[in-house]
Structure formats: C-alpha cells, structure tokens
Image 1 (tube, rainbow, N blue to C red):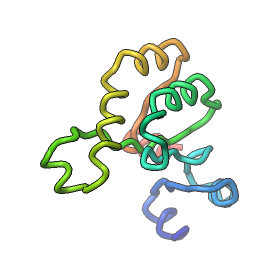
Image 2 (cartoon, rainbow, N blue to C red):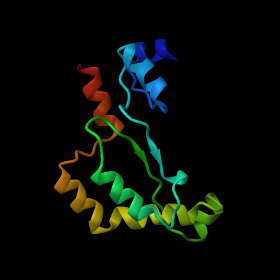
Image 3 (cartoon, helix red, strand yellow):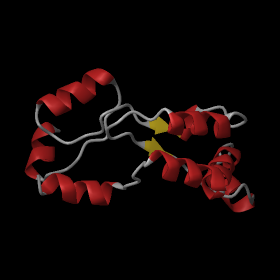
Length: 122
C-alpha cells in the first residue's frame, strides 16, 4: 500500500491517529485529523454537530465525508435506510449557515483533486 502510494504519488485517506502518524512519518500525504463520515452522526442533531465542528476546526487538513441526497423513492431504492441521512446532509449544505461559518472562519474548502496536485508538486 505504501509503495503504491509513493509510486503513483497518491494521497491517503487515513483514519486513526496512529495511522495518520505512520503515513506522515513515511513522508506520504494524508489528512492531519480523523475524517468525519456523516453516516456516523445522529441525523437529528447533525446541523448542531456540523456547526460546532466548523467553529472548532483545528488548523490542518480535516476531511468530511458527507453524502448529500434527496430523501425520495429513487434514493430509497439505492440506499435503503440512508436516504434520510443523505437528506440531512443536503439540507445542511444548501443552507446559509455553513457558508457563513466557513467564510467567517477563513476555512478553505478543497477536494482530493486539488490536494493531489499540491502533493505531487511538493
């Protein structure tokens, strides 16, 4: 896994402080903090949780895996039981609250494509 990442200049998606430390010790790019998966959050408290996380975001690279979608028949067929979770992600992301919080805190949003280019040039 490490050899492939180095050979192809790929970034890691790492979970757990010990794995993050190991990947960084080897000089390979990865997130600085555990990533957040929206499926692990209580959907009824998600907006409050997301807002608190944004206000307390540490300096460095933090990944959030969110799964926006519409709670409809089509999504229910694809992801039974998950369409409500995806709807809560969608509702939060299209609201004004995250945009205002991100702008006020000076948070820079990036995707892995942009990170890959930065890491390959470093």
